[in-house]
Image (cartoon, rainbow, N blue to C red; front, side, top):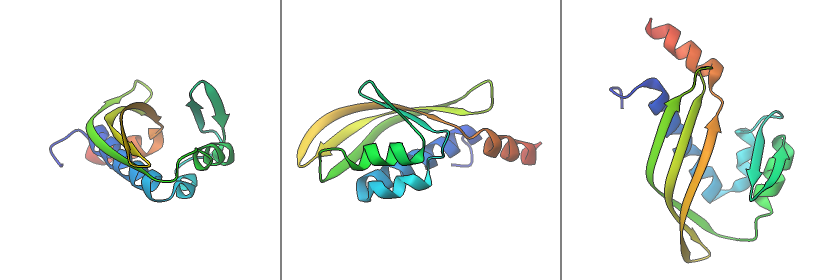
Length: 118
C-alpha cells in the first residue's frame, strides 16, 4: 500500500471502514459524519450527523452485505478526496448491483500528511 498515492491509501481505508460499519451496525456511522455532513439518498437530502444516521438506520432492510469490486480515488483542487465505489449488494439474501459515490472531506488530514513527506 505504501507505493500508492496518499489519497488512494486514505480513500481505500475509508471505504473499507465505512462499509464494515454499514454492514455490521449502521448506528455506528455517526462516528464518521459531522454536523456539516450532507447525504442525498434517492433524491432526498439530509444534513447533519443525526439526520443522516436516522435515515441510514431507518432503511427497510435488516441484513446487508457489500462486496466492493472496484474503487477509484482522486484528489480535488481543495485537497479533499473524491471516491467512486462499485460493487455488489446483498440485501436480505437478494443480490443487486451497486454503484455509489462518496465525497470524502479529508482536507486537513490530507494536508497534514502531505506536509510530513515534504
